[in-house]
Image (cartoon, rainbow, N blue to C red; front, side):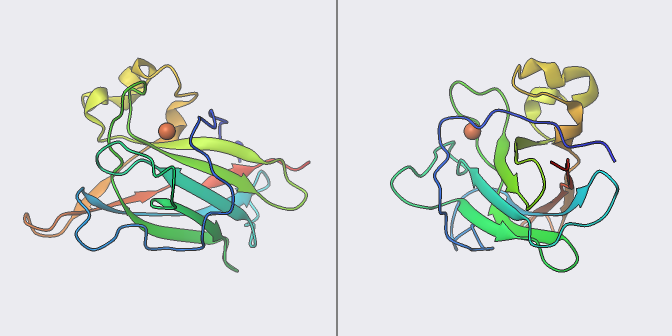
Length: 169
Ligand SMILES: [Fe+2]
């Protein structure tokens, strides 16, 4: 499998985020989104016990600097899987596209910082393959993931799958 592309860490990383899978608090504005995936090595073997640190802006495009809102530390389970509930991050000045930051570490593998992007981002105008370079920080179109919408019109939920492939040291 091809290793997941690196992307910038950016200025808003904080270490030691709490282990939570529910980042979206009741009443938080924004489109609810479930983000899930698996971590693999380049041979296609799943990696259980990989640590995934995640941070993102809230729906208003703000990072929580003082606290840990929309930050978590996850560990992949025996199937190599991770999942969390959040909201679609907002756009913010200085960045073109909506994104979620990832930092992934696993024993005997190269640490990876990257970012997840959403094919539904209005910046892409429905064609991320053609338009992903509108955000100069997007290192690979593979980081732009499809978004599945479900639920009735008053309560739409989004789901995104983001699988990660790490290289061995
Ligand atoms: Fe960011």
